[in-house]
Amino acid sequence: MARFSTQREIISQIILGEGKHMTAEEIAMKAKKVNPKIGIATVYRNLNTLVEEGKIKKVRDNNQGFVYDSNNQPHYHFECTECGAMYDLPIKYNEKLDDVVRHELKLDVANHKTTFYGTCKKCLMMKEEDTWN
Ligand SMILES: [Zn+2]
Ligand SMILES: [Zn+2]
Figure 1: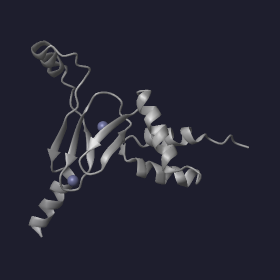
Figure 2: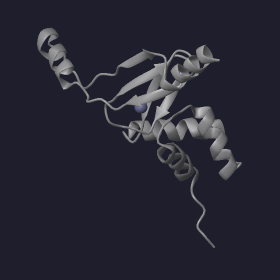
Figure 3: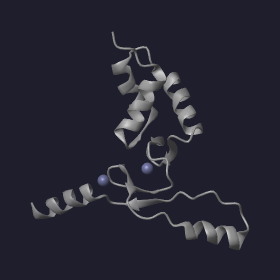
């Protein structure tokens, strides 16, 4: 018989496997399908451990409070003000910005987070279709 996955393994497989931003509630819903005994408190506890270990990031999201991010490298986000979707932006992390704050303000900077707000491609395309109809 196959070994049962621990609750922790199930939760980390969901967030690391999906490769995107998920709320604790979304993760809990998927985890429950694998093991109905997994509750929201267990999900929060395990997500916090994964954040502490640096395997995932916790990101503030204007619509949903916090989302968990399986991309643990410093990167930029785009949040759509129409549909609320959050995307990773495939642009280079600007280390120079950290240096500016280090040198000009004499602060010990580890990294920075930036979220761009606007309309995502999907919503832009839907708007275009509307004007053609
Ligand atoms: Zn959108
Ligand atoms: Zn991200």
